[in-house]
Length: 99
Image (cartoon, rainbow, N blue to C red; front, side, top):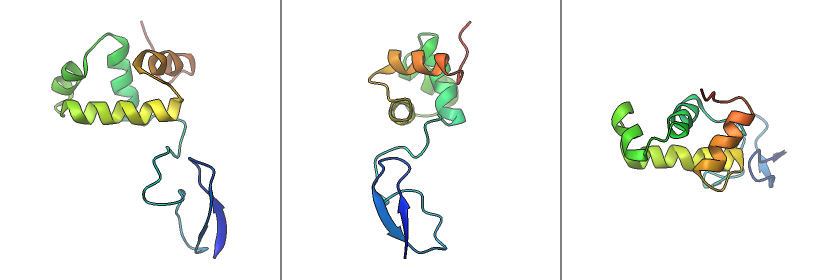
């Protein structure tokens, strides 16, 4: 078994050398990337315009619960405490544009 380090939480774990696992467990709640996914960025851009989760959900044809889940993943990746901070960080880092 090879030693690896979880990209999200930093915990060391053992995995077979052929394993492509990047996280310490299936249950690791940490993001394994600091960059929002294209869908997360799309939702953050809508939030930047002042859209509610329900409005975003209706526009994208997904549930408000799914929108909330995408936003929560973005908060972790951007190390943000709330939607306003997540939008500010995403704009500052160039993940979304606001005009």
